[in-house]
Every structure is written in C-alpha cells, then in structure tokens.
Image 1 (cartoon, rainbow, N blue to C red):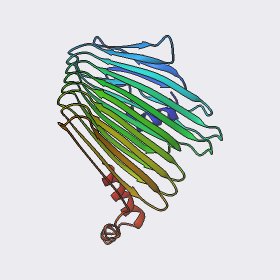
Image 2 (image 1 turned 30 degrees about the vertical axis):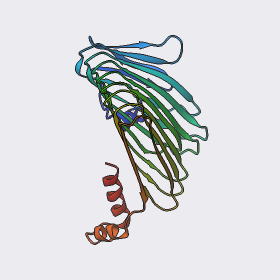
Image 3 (image 1 turned 90 degrees about the vertical axis):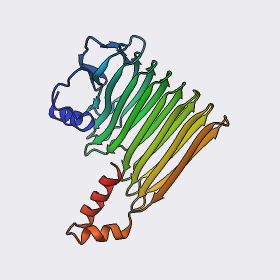
Length: 305
C-alpha cells in the first residue's frame, strides 16, 4: 500500500500496522490482504463482489477489520458483505470506507452489509466514512445495512461520517426477535455543498425487544441533511429515536422521526432538536483566548462525541 492508502486506513479504521485477528482489506475494488483465525473465516463470494464473514458459536473477545479504500479516480465500487454470527459469540467488527479523489471524475463506493446474529450473539460494529482530495470529482458513499437479530441477540452500531463526503444515502433496516436489542449511534458532519440522507427502519417483532437510535449531526456552509426514522412496535417492546442537529452558515436539516405502535404494550418515543451554536457559548470560549474558529471547533467536537 502507498502512503495515501495508509492514511485512509488510519482515518477510517485506526489501522497503522497489521491488525490483530481476522481482517480483509479492499482497495480499488479488489481484496489485497486477508487473515482468518480458528474461529473466524472470511470467504470470497462467487456470485457477486464481496465476502462472507463466518464467526463460530461461543467466539469471545475477537475482532474483524474489513476496511475499504478508493484511490482510483472514476471508480464505482459495489460490495456485498454478509456476517454470520454464531450463538453466544461476542465480537467487534470494524468497517468503513475512505476515498481519495484528486481528479474531475466521480469516485463511489456502495457497501451492502447484512448481519445475521444467532441467539444471544453480541456484536459491536463500527463504521467510519471519510473523503479527501483536491480534485473537483465527487466522493460518494452509500452504505446499506440489513440487520436480523435472533432471540437475545445484541447489536451495537456506531456509524460516523468524518468529513469530505459529497453525497451519501445511508439506509439501515432491522428486524428484531424476542429479547433482541439494537443500539445505533450516528454522528455525521457535512460542509460545502454536500448532501446526506439517513433512513432507519426498525421492526420490533419480538417480545421484550428494544431499539435505541441516536443521531447527532452538523450541517455547515451550504450543505443539507435529511434524517428519517421509522420504528414499528409489533409486540411488547421499547423503542426510542433521538435526533439532534446543529446548523451553521446556510446549512439545512430536515428531521422526520416516526413511530408506529401495533401492539398495546409497545412503548415508543421520539424527539428531535435542530438549532444553531449559541452565541453565549462562543463568547465564553473566546474570553478564554480562543479564536472564533477554535471556539466553533471545540463546540462541534464536543457535540459529536
């Protein structure tokens, strides 16, 4: 890998050297490095681009890294990754995509990730997106996540858009069985003329299933964002959606949290808040010696944590 690819890997997956455990690194549409373990296998699909990640039952304290980097301008990369998590496993999965584009052509990555968690399996999934490059070509990232949680399964998902992504459509759909739990935290920032659309669809089919979706975002310059969520309670369950956004300059944000209760014992809530950085916050920080730009950066970083 060259220095640009190494920098992208550091941004999206905190990889500075060969990661421990299982991993599959994809660059410019091709797998370039792979490692498996006794409990985690990675198999190349034969019918479409992508891999199957198979984790044995009772696997504990292991990790899988599957980052993607694009440095070839004008490339549209599509990948299908399926995760099969065995009963009682407890693992961490780190994904994400970084694009470097210094040309006038569009570079795009569409990643479709499907999770199949067996009974009492537990996964922490981290996905980061990042774009860079001085060219006028667009950097487009469209992640799609499909989640199926069996009885007692838990998926904790952290999805982050760092910066530099011109356009993104982020779609997540989930179906939960009895006692399953889904915890999603989204953090994203748009700037310049960028656009971002996020859609969450969650079906709480199982008794005592639960889902919590939290989104924090910042829209700067002339960028725009749209947040849509739909939590459907079909059983005795709990669901909560929270969307908080800051707008700066000419930024625009649309938030549409929706909840549907199809069972008398469904407990569903939602809240949304959109506002600007309070002037008194900036003044207080600037009296401590920070410039306006430094004060804004401090507030932004704290808000997105």
